[in-house]
Length: 380
Ligand code: GMT
Image 1: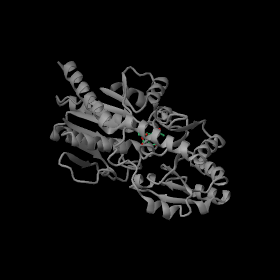
Image 2: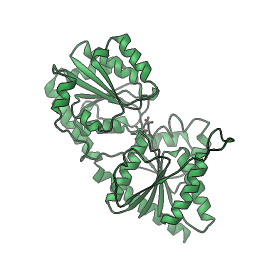
Image 3: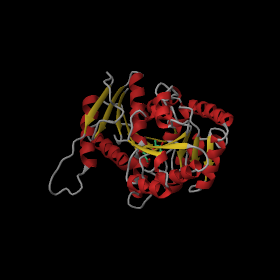
Image 4: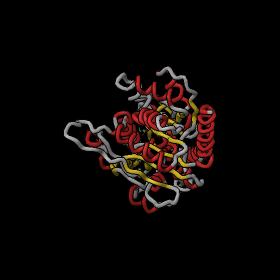
């Protein structure tokens, strides 16, 4: 197949999933074309089946907000025609589902059929998508996509609650590549970060309010008051300054390291004892899955799709949003009992294996084929 992929190329989870999926499809022999404004972060190596088409912005004094949707659609029309794409897969509905629909209609006027698939990732439905500023367009364009997938059962349920959706939504969970995410020996890192054998807790995110990174620090404060521990905060974003202040206020700075954005997250997960993810909303929680693949149990909230990934009392623990006392209690239970921690580590790995890239990606491949066949059959 010749596959077109549209995504946000930055550090967000949807861009990561889109890129990893594209790479896996290319490994399976398909030709995959990424069409976006920047080379996706994880698309760093040459691959004979991978192509990147940059969408450049068009500056003009009249445009206070450069019309990205329009330049993206124009680029897509060009790529679909010249690269003879069989299917266009867009990740994150806003604005990609509407751009896909516009592209499809332009091509239809030229006698070209373009099957389109939209993958819903989370905030395109929850925090942002169902806000009135976007909702009518999101609903219309989901209904106009030839195929729609969601990354968890809970996200599918929320989509059906918030919108009037006529289309069948297929759930295809996020996935993990064990060639990259696995526990490796990084004892020299561990010694550098925790020289006196302290426990290591890790959180990774884009430090937006929805991630509730404050809660990570509050949980850590309760932990470090009872057991020697270090906290690694990986990532960056709008909350960073405020979080640094909170560390000073709670007097946890000497045990906390802000590591900024990191590419080799797996090397840091390799030395972690626990992963903390106290999000307000999380459609799946790819970061939790990455930790589990590296044998790190997860202390998380019970929001969104997290219970589909992290199993309470088995691979980690789930708490209500904001219940930092409960999260700290659960973390301490594991940190104070090496045998239990080791059992949870094994369980976390076993659970992560359900989401192995080699099991999940063929589901996307089969779905592409199904959608293409049904669009072509409808055309007659
Ligand atoms: O909102 C974000 O944190 C980024 C967002 C994205 O689309 O880039 O992440 C969402 O998609 C990920 C991949 O499918 C999921 O693993 C995340 O849970 C989800 N984030 C939220 O729902 C908050």
